[in-house]
Length: 350
Ligand SMILES: C[S@@+](CC[C@H](N)C(=O)[O-])C[C@H]1O[C@@H](n2cnc3c(N)ncnc32)[C@H](O)[C@@H]1O
Image 1 (cartoon, rainbow, N blue to C red):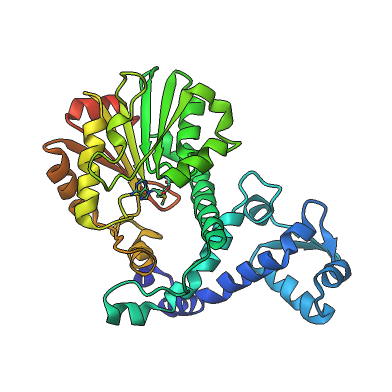
Image 2 (cartoon, helix red, strand yellow):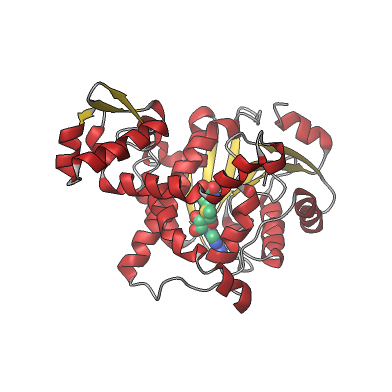
């Protein structure tokens, strides 16, 4: 908590205490379809309340509160999307976060199991077993949310690297493929290798966003937790990847499994290559601080690390090497690892 650095400690306390109010409000008005209704053209109070079945007097109070939060703007009797809502909350935007909103809503119940989880010593499932259809929807939401976040972070993320003109990049646990897509778009001399679980690869093969990459992107499926679980075959012809990316995967399982995964990732890397890890770390500012609890509540044995603890794991997995860190303004952090300092210097933009 950053309370002491806030101008008023009491303000910090009340903001922390009531943070759920704005979150619930956001999720509910989005679910009601308000941002779609207002869209680009804006809409009047009467029309909005009629379309959403709201009482006009209470509806106006709600809309005014949304103006106070800068989610809407009002001009006379007409309400418009603010630039923020227009970017993130309206489906017509390329930056729309619809899957992230649905995914987060799905997670609320698990935060109510915190006490039971602490007492049981392992994850408590907030809902019962899911049907195959429910599982497919949950996977779509999860990958959709990952993709939306990745598209936001990718430009800042890749700006850190100064890759050579040609090469091969492997992403292990590539999910939506959004990081690979963003990289391959700006580096036309590069080829991509997409590795993930079979059901995720099947979705990625159908993805309209990845289709334009054609033959430049190859797909591999397997389970990275298993010895020889498919990673060993990941190459473009006989070209071992010069760049290997692990984005948001080191937190997915326990420490021993992650250390093994790091070692397997390192084995794929061509000599002089770079391993890049993107994740949330306990000592990073922002959302990283609660990410460990998110893993505690929502995964079998996922967890996060401090940067120092993670560097020790890297060293145990890869042997001697050198590591450089960068915090992203969007809240996560990047670590780049290479065998030698001069390799790191060559790859990093500063
Ligand atoms: C949190 S998502 C990250 C997706 C993407 N890298 C990103 O940052 O947007 C983790 C990904 O790792 C994949 N994954 C998890 N466990 C895996 C395993 N045992 N073998 C292969 N892939 C796995 C998941 O299917 C998912 O796509």
